Length: 283
Image (cartoon, rainbow, N blue to C red; front, side):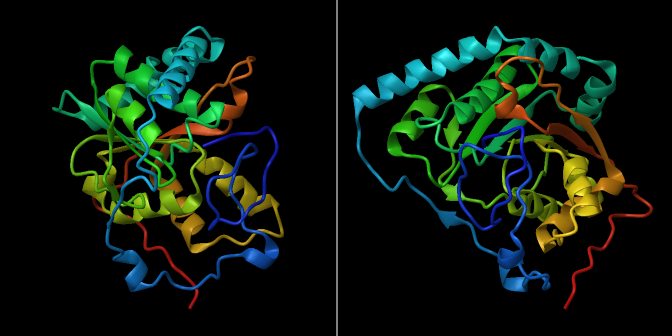
């Protein structure tokens, strides 16, 4: 989950990209074919996951914890964080959170695609923002974290910070059976597609809050970049725009711009009578 002021065009099937990002677009020769997403793909089973390494290295853990503490301090003292808190507490956005919560008092958080918090600062800053949200707001519940590239060291540090690391690779397919905040800045389009697809009904979409790539930015690229053809994954995102209320996150003047560039809050309010649109794919 890393960011840049410039658009990076990369293959949507690729893994973690560092250090440049805005909207993940497929190259002309590397486009995902616009074929209907197969039933097998839609019904993909969650795969058990453990870190590829099993090393317990206390020195590495200590150094990583120091890095995260430095990121927490840097973020908490930044202009960006002031803007971020003020924006959440603005009546327009706060009322959206309240609507999703309804009669519930807690909204758990799921962090997908966190990236390597040991190697890169941007993922550490993004994780720090999730942790600071939990510390600041009583309505933020447990934090669950997953990225298939997480090491044993990173997993142990995350757990020591009070986060739960998932033992299944859900590939973004978590149903919002209750109010849930999905924290996914700078993930690939396929993860947003999977999340939306598995929640593609009125009741579950209303339980879902998404902090991630701007849907408006995806729409902008489909409108102005002639070389870009929307993949099935992006089409799901574009279809959701008809019932999405988006608030672009203000990044401020400091050097945290890269970590949160083109991120937005998304709230979903599909109409009960009309339901959700059918997403059409080419055969």
